[in-house]
Image 1 (tube, rainbow, N blue to C red):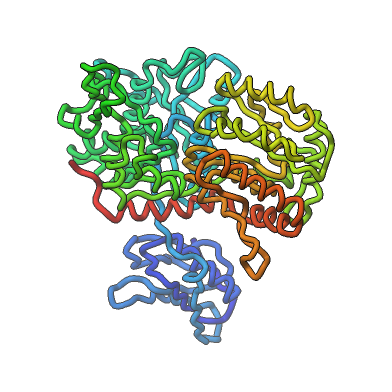
Image 2 (cartoon, rainbow, N blue to C red):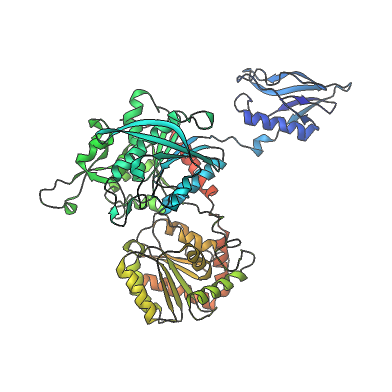
Amino acid sequence: MEIMLQSCTNVIVKPPMKLGVDRQLASSAFASIKRSCNVSLRAISMSTEDGSSYVEDVKKNGVFLGAEMDESGSVVGFRLLPQSDDKKEVIVEDELSEEMPTKATYNIVFVTSEASPYSKTGGLGDVCGSLPIALAARGHRVMVVTPRYLCGGPADRKFDGAVDLDCRIKVSCSGGVQEVVFFHEYKAGVDWVFVDHPSFHRPGNPYGDAYGAFGDNQFRFTLLCHAACEAPLVLPLGGHTYGEKCLFLANDWHAGLVPVLLAAKYRPHGVYKDARSIVVIHNLAHQGVEPATTYNNFGLAPEWYGALGWVFPTWARTHALDTGEAVNILKGAIVTADRILTVSQGYSWEITTREGGNGLDELLSSRKNVLNGITNGIDVTEWNPSVDEHIPSHYSLDDLTGKIECKIALQRELGLPIRPDCPLIGFIGRLDYQKGIDIILSGVPDLLQDDVQVIMLGSGEKQYEDWMRATEATFKDKFRGWVGFNVPISHRITAGCDILLMPSRFEPCGLNQLYAMRYGTVPVVHATGGLGDTVKTFNPFADEGKGEGTGWAFKPLTRESMLDALWVAIETYRKHKTSWRGLMKRGMERDYSWDNAAVQYEHVFKWAFVDPPYVS
């Protein structure tokens, strides 16, 4: 670039850092010349990285006198002279140090079995579809590696924007050599890389079909992990590869072989010696456990068996002669990853306990110094009551009148008596043991003796689906059960209810309580995992009587504790309208964005590179 001077001063620009270190900082410093001295920036030619010359020539009106250097010879400023008789010299101090603090950026590789909108069965798909975009927006180079699932239906069109990169690799695993193909789509600042193989082409969801889990899931996700380790080395995305200095985020057991492969397959040969890996645990209950005889399928040397070797406790074995020997992919990831993350701080502690560790609590406790939790964000564009296309009336923190209209519309839609002042309690989720449906089942008959209405949306175990139908028939004016799942209805329940109930036995993060608070619906939750982190119990006496808290988090998980919390919430709704409005507004004020979560992830990225990588 060149500089044209339009003022009559000799200008010295002094940015706060050595310009040879960061060109982005340099260009910002040059921009300050224009702000402070009425200088028109056309172009300034940047050359040697040691900073010896950043300006080659000033055409037309100005003359470049030279660079200001410190004792080490690094450039700290520029001396510019216009064509004018007035040789008055002005020093422009750039305020860049306050405007743009330096921040490390990384080449980040997400490895995941699902990423929305391409594939999704739950929260994992949401995280890996949203967090990469937030990190890319903050200046990182981000790749997501996930399978190219083709099921022969309309969902296949989600991959229409992905192009074949004409890059094939050979993967040695499961006693043979498999050819893997890469597809790519660049969208929202992220490189979405899809691993293609015939094992990903079948009806069903990513993990199974109506008959249960696929029997070859270990093989399918072993392929994914091998391919993900090769992708940064062989794919020239945007003209050049990501290279060896990458940060891998291995999500759940499906990507758990990635840290193991880095340590066992690559680093012994000098590859990825500067890379780091973080295993992100979304649900410790799923660990990728298979018989020990399947170890040879991973394509690893025999000496690495110890990293993945696992022995079931005696009570979990199938018969007296069963030795319980198995391989556990998530265990291997926990052993070899440089850092460990969970999706909430509460869950990061729970998994180190005997009750919440699913057999890995001792191992996780031994690595507590590298274990952290970060609460997931939500899509604040999709979940926004001021623009939500699924709800009948929009509202916001400043104008809550639309929420009453949403409640009336929901009562009308589901055939309940239209009663705007009647407490309306909602539940959205799977009908299974983890979600505490048995606690709801035992408590709802007593709850419905009060003047309330209850709406439940979900599907799962047949006994609970049948119970919902029977309860609706018994309490026609008070209870509605929608068996199945429907996205628009879930939005309308979130907007129309006064209270959202979540008595989960464990909840790594939980999203529905975040949606509820954003919509001014007050959550009543079991204080576990992410629920306990995000829902603070209402205290009416705090803040000089103004109150604090966003809902109620109860313990222990019993019918009595749940009903006690619900009755306190109901009485607050009925008799303390000002306090209730405060609860709603405090929930709506919180920052649930992925950008907020991305800032916390960046801290962990920095810590990952402080220590040397894992070596055996």
